[in-house]
View 1 (spheres, rainbow, N blue to C red):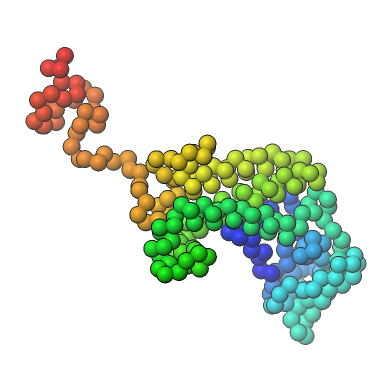
View 2: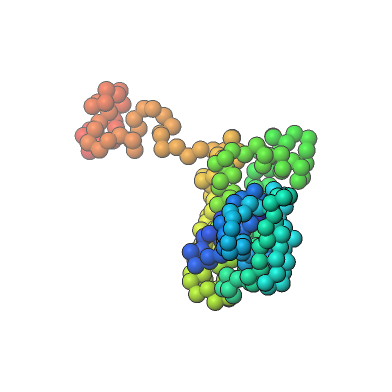
Length: 259
């Protein structure tokens, strides 16, 4: 597995949110490993290359069928140049969350994100997908999103899954994880609310959400520019009258005749 994909994010990105959650990296295909190098397998165990020789190159296919018995070998590598990993046992208890658990957290969050997208941007989805409906239409629309839009979805997914992971790590004795989890959950809920165009209380925001333009090209854009190019009362600098600006207004803001 080059990377364990979990919805819009990945296991390593989610786990990397915690400086105290330090596990060996996941196995990678066609990768050179030095002697004595350790990785984590898909069962949550540590696997180590031979202590001498090398470097050793992993196979190009899928992840090896790991031997789950401590001290026992697993063969890896291309034909004619194989080597053996040795099972070193499980990770420490406060690092023992398996990849499959993190994937489950991310998929749960992805479901929430997808529900928001399909409800909020249904018109944009229909415009892109044509006659397609349901999951097929949604998949086509997702495939048309920009890199910036996908980055937003990845961030929301990562923060939401990290909140779940942090709460789990705290129960396993990782003392700082619950503090990270609380912060990640706050950020996740804020980002998801922006995606839904809601405020913190679940009320619809008249101006929409900050991500709208990334998901619907016809979304309203907030602008700092005035709608008209002329100078009206609120836009006129203090102390400057219409006459000073060469305008024909009889009265204007800060005009002495208004007193």
